[in-house]
Image (cartoon, rainbow, N blue to C red; front, side):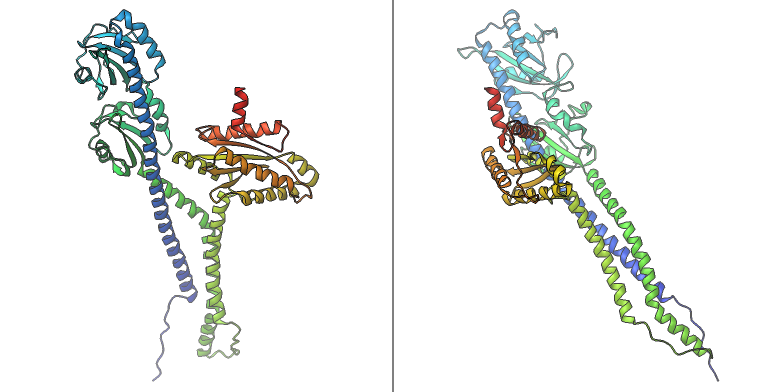
Length: 533
């Protein structure tokens, strides 16, 4: 009996190989994406919460100084009236004077020891002779010492915080107090300092609470005087603690918050960023990575199909040959073994490895291009801006040197732009050789360069600038001759407390060097000395 073997259908080897390759690619991309997303999110999370902690601490120091200045201002006013009869005629003009010279308060009021208002500035409130019954007035009269109230509605129905200072005569007899009012829901000193921060694209903002957890400043004016003592961060502030943490606020929203107290007033400042902002940034980064990777993945898929067919070709030929042989094909010729199995398999593995290496290499190249100048290899202008912004936030003093090659247009005109580029690279090399381990060399644009020197005084920065200038003057450049350079120096925070102004002042010093004949270094402080003379 002859048994017939039933033909069995199955997947082609080329399809199996293609499926395995594509699945491997997709799994690798998925794992890389998940790891990248989590790493990016964690990094942004840590950086944001750390920066919010720094911001809150810096603002608490600013507000602490502000409160002390407010109290000192009221103390000076109270001392002035110590030997003056507290009646409207005697004090009104002087109270108007103090009001005009004080940037802190929306209004000033003098209350005698009997709790009667004897004078106000501005004198348009019609309160003279009235007897306020607010807790702030009662406490100021009872304590007979400097006092900062909780938010309350005054006689005028304004929501205010009152800062008061007692008035004593030369014999130590209590006469009353002078009180400065801050209108919480109108323009005030806190809104001037903190209000700009409320419009950031990230949704970050600051707010201030008093010792009982009441909002005394918030970008949303309608929330001022709201009690948020249930917020975990506010609870820590009420204990005088400083820190940074993830928090769910009183409205159920997730934030990354930094917080610091203001000891002089018993207040607390919170700087916070919505957590979903971090998530959105991380998702955008992943989307950009996917967009960048998509063409390469598509190319890899096409290549895998082609390689799988090439790899399966010998087996297909063998299967066809066996089928024809079993069918008794008389025209069948001897099988030509012209393909090496191992070689084709190795080619597939090598191709996949090369494809992924290309993705990694191009990703690294994109990262390098985003942070460095393509011609000189120095730090680019965008990264320089990020460095100086971070130093300013951290309160790190630093000096900036702005350098500009003299008559560089003549070099390009006489020797061509290609040789001009060689001169720029030559100058960059000298800068790098003269910089310290923590310094940064940057290309500002064209023939203009910048050096950032953390913790360097103006004198030290001038010394570095002069070394660079002399080396360039004494060196033979790629065009066969020397060139010269003019340099300007300015220091943060001595010259300016804002980075934009600092670069502006360094640039002014540079152009003074140009006006003085070029090939020299000018410090911004010398310009200031000349201006005083």
